[in-house]
Length: 551
Image (cartoon, rainbow, N blue to C red; front, side):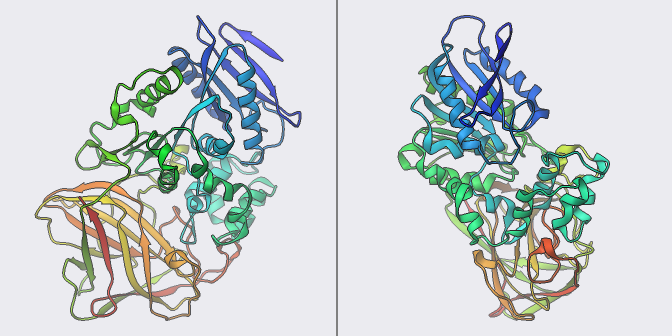
């Protein structure tokens, strides 16, 4: 079945099980057959944006194929996230190959969910597919949903609400805040929609990365997809996108022969591939909005055989350096020349010391963590509700922070003024010696730059539960003193001369992550919460410190 409107036609493409998927094909006005670009989209509200993109691509001599995923928009079938996507994608590619307007040179294209769909097909692509362009998408689903046992509420509760597939029982503008308040949280779906969302219930209860849920089937296969990729890939990421770490893992899992032909661009962007927050990012639009300049060169080369205008697009990692407003090109991956170690030192008063010298005397500081009054999220990468436009949504990226001592449950450590710029080049690692009187709890860290005028912006943040500390499942006994390591996501950030380095330690970052109830077990099944006494140890044999990779 098809209808025609000038150079655009609508097809209902049959899948192997008889379900027909709504597909819009936009063709250049003259010539043909053409190389084709395929994108598959689960978001009906973005259809108009994709059709605008179609104009760009057909204007440069490509056929553009836009398909709505099963059960979404006008496509038939039942909407179950990620189920059927491999088969549907491959069936659609074979359909494109058979069309008279296709010259058998195909590229896949898309971001976020659409990027995951590309990775999922990577091992099985027909030879007519020459390259993939994947933006802000990742392969490590557990690490996208969780950081060390702590669920990314703002991201995936928001996503579940937007993609539930049911009409809500409550006003749209109240859904998110209502969802956060439901206890036990697993009942959120029934409370908001009157239906269960089995896939979301799996997400919020499967908190152990070693469980079969994450290590069999689709999610297990997806983790290994880059290893089995045979064609060049262009990967686009943002320092403040929630898929950054997963995309880094994807890139580094590519076979060396494929990685040497691929490209990885990382800008100062959030999930929309644009900037946000309170800092200026000079020259971030080097590749123009949505990185179309890079995408066009990439597809012109791989689908039309044209040479690259920019030689650094092949076999390179290109990264934006925050604080310098410039791009830096790397062979292979980001490197550093040395490390800088700063010790946390507890002192008298609300602000403690961050020093290159290890404190001789052992000290500690304690605070009360009340999960009913969590520390509010201010910036970072693990956010999505800001896309709703809600006035109370947490702002992403780097934003101005509260002054030290604003809350008694946030312990601040501050360095002396930097005598020279400090160029962070990679992942900062935080080592803490801590204890709690709870049977399980969480600890957070936020690394910041305090500028000469006293204003402060976040650089990186992280979190861990004690149960899933140090990248493994570990038991915890109340009041036991343990060492925890939190590796933060990589970044290129140059602190200015005269700035100070600030480290905040606390136990909550809500709603970026769920507020740990200080009770052992699955957080989404808990109805009660307890106040916990948390202690940080510094100096002597029970020290705490951070390690910064520097250029």
